[in-house]
Amino acid sequence: MKSLIAHAALAAIEDRSPAALASDTYLPAAQQLAATATAPATVPSVLASLSRPPFARHTLAGLAVCLGLSAPWGAAQAEEPARRAIVKAPIPHDRVKSVSGTLFISGGGRMPESSMQRFIDFGGGEDCRLVIITTASEAADTPDVESRVAPFRNLRVADLCVVHTRDRDVANSHEFCIPLENATAVWFIGGHQSRLTEVYLDTRVERCLRQLLERGGVIGGTSAGAAIMSQVMIKGGNPEPELERGLGFLPGTVVDQHFLKRRRQDRLLNALSAFPHLVGVGIDEGTSVVVQGRRMTVLEESDSEVVTFLAETPGLPVRQSTLRPGDQVDLLALSRSAAARVSPKVSPSNTIRGQGLSSGSVMLAGGGLVSPEAAERFIASAGGPESLIVVVTTAAGETPPDAAETTAWLRSAGARNVVCVHPLDNCEAEAAELLELLAGAGGIWFTGGRQWRLVDALEGTQFCDRLQQLLARDGVIGGNAAGASILASYLVRGNPLDNRQIMGEGYEDGFGLLPGTAVDPYFSQRHRLNDMARLKLARPELLGLGIDEGTAVLIRGRELEVLGENRVSIFDQLAEGTESPGNFLSLGAGDQFDLIDMAQIEREDSPRVEPQSFSAAFDADDAVEATGPLLCE
Image 1 (cartoon, rainbow, N blue to C red):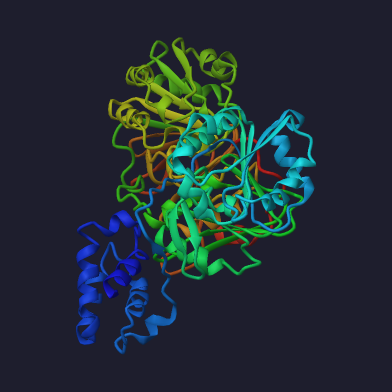
Image 2 (cartoon, rainbow, N blue to C red; image 1 turned 135 degrees about the vertical axis):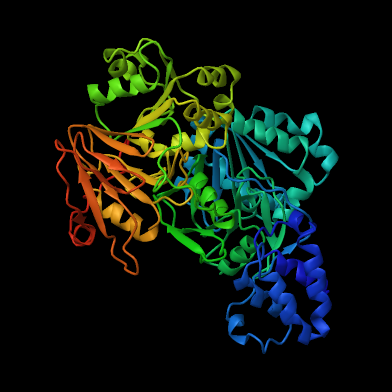
């Protein structure tokens, strides 16, 4: 028994997935710790060995408590209760993906008729072909189940069909699935979620349901019908949940229902302790969420709230957010945040500060029009007018912008060989034709738009490898606005729902062509000095570059040169032993900066610029007026 508890406790450390518990790293440690349960004197040495990575020191006290050990050596460490979950079998779990079709998930209790009508509207309104699956209910085999179906009969639909079986062979039959093949909407009533998974998981029914989403239909459910939506399903138990595999229409999540009414916060947090890569979604009674693509929206007619959670990880507390009717959240961003918390990336050791660029050139433009001088310098760095320049327009949105308009600034500066590309996902980014095109380019340029689109489409692909290869062969890479931010190692304004925030957890990693830097465009025009101060206080190791609209910097070797009509602000490390953001330099057209000496390069025609106080700027009240997210960067 204690060995099993040890496994469960170890699931609350670092990776925590059931598959990891079978690894050479976890299992011997669990067995060793369990073996010491009758000899507390030996426990401190075991705990010490477990305090090194991949084990988290702050979880060790909870591990000891799980085993029922007295802990005189560190009683103060045992203040936080250990979180436990019962995982009966390995459960595959992916990060959140954009959902095809629509998911309509309700937390149980009374569902307003207006919400039911919204569900029908997603299924086609009066043309909706609705299938109601009643299997979760214990009354599914009796006439009493009609009371659960009756509210939908009051709505105008083209067809309504009730289906139910407790036989997996029937669930795999063609005849049983015919209504699902023709459906535009499917609804799961409440009851017990295990009744649904026992019959329909890995059957023809499940395949038909996925096909329904792929053709743009809607799947909804309440209570038990909500619990099955996630891959990791809470079968029961409170506060220690029993976890099994759900139907997984909403991967990357753990969904709980009746959330506030039945006080299930600890249950959901315990589930996340076993699967910290996932996003917890707690939906209260009388409340519904709609998931389309990457966004989850709480219906305005909902009676209560939805709460999202990210698990506690070493050095980071539980992250909890409350969503009220009308609020929405980006589930993909939350999923990336959860992954970043569990496996944080190490800051690059080879920063541009003190080293410069080892090869190639990088141009960063702060938004708006790129000056003719900057355009000419970019073309020259790419190898001249005949060299191939590839313009990446992905940040602009789903639809590629007009190619002639997008490349006019380059062509007017003399470029004769310019090609636009618009990869929207990892597969398109790794197409052989595109990679071959990049291999022959002398320059690559990223247009403005939204930074997160570049991350989603290109991160971790061979496309990014081609960028490093281009610099290695002395080419040039540049970008404007969002296309400039993405080239740094720290990505600013990556939050898909609100680019007014300079830090967006889950979208903080750029392409890293400028290690140890953060680049913020439209700097003076959008009053972003306070934002940079906040970033520097949180990440003092970064070299911050605030670039004004209509202005660019060209970085080659150890030199940074300012081009254009406005200014570039350079923010170095914080002063030793202080919490002040420190000083910064504001350089104008023609000014140069030495990235090794970290000082302005003084020339006769370029007077010395005196540093400005960063702390004074941070204290000043020049915050941007609260508005909706900006359409582009």
